Image 1: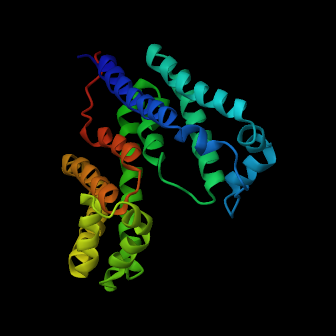
Image 2: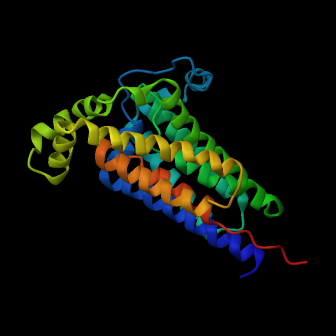
Length: 268
């Protein structure tokens, strides 16, 4: 496999995964729900959302079902075109811009910043650059990913969350209250109930999650442990999905490719 074929292979893989995820969002009805019929406009202190508000785009898209559906179709179609014309960076850049607007709309509607699509953006970042700097862009995206996880872990450490041994038990009670009420006999409910009844076990899971996040600081210093970090991403978000019922698994595991990619030397 030559240099450009290697890039195109990874590009097709990542774009296909994101396109399939968006198609699933469409099929399940979540995609339209994410951006249509917002009850309020959330701007907070983030200048990005103020710029969106001043542009008038949220009002145009969020409160018109036809426009929202058209935007969803355009977003999915842009990724299909990017895969079909894999050698044209412009289509990939356009897909990334539309995806960013989709996530901003999603956050704008929810009223808080969500990480559902966070991984998609870092995973796409290397494909915005020329082939000659592609390996460096992969390294940059990997370092940004490591910073994100490491800061999340150090935040828990710095703010003393690890010192409250029953904090995770309280989180589980709040996070799964409705699920435990409506589905009390499922295996997940039984697992959560067991952890609630054994706070030290829940505390152990919390510490494991915090340490997994902190371990990503190694990715800033060396690439030697990248395969381990790739496994940690999958493990952390499987645990996050199972225990916290947070639907960020699909978006975040896309980042794994940044840690398993091996650059090839460009042919002379």
